[in-house]
Amino acid sequence: MARAVLPTILLLCLVTTYHGVNGIFMDKLATKKLCADEECVYTISLAKAEDDYNAPDCRFINIKKGQQIYVYSKLVKEKEAAEFWAGSVYSDQYDEGIGVVGYFPSTLVKEQHVYQEANKEIPTTDIDFFCENACG
Image 1 (cartoon, rainbow, N blue to C red):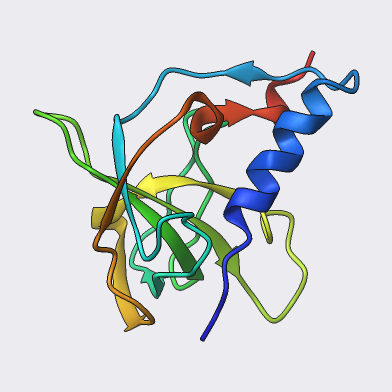
Image 2: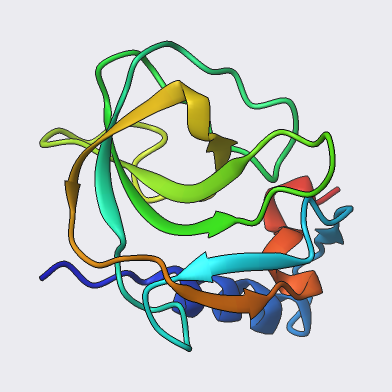
């Protein structure tokens, strides 16, 4: 079973903010997310990108068609908003985007393997939308 490191990465981002690294808290994309467990530490699934995606801001990740993506959480769609999932690109080779966690449209990917059902609804927090790479 694959384990996610999303909360650890997000916590690290928060901690680095307090140690002189600047960042920015972006607008929330949703108020709730679906996870496999209460702490959102387990990988939900492995998905494959069906098209390219260029991140519009630091909350999102760039994806190329055919890339594998580990999915960590799924934002609960609100009203007319798009549905976004959080994940990181997987590759056997080092790539600039490998290991970067961010959001992407769920319609962009097809799940290849589900590790665990995302049936725990958890409130999102400001740290879910923190952008360290928005530093000045």
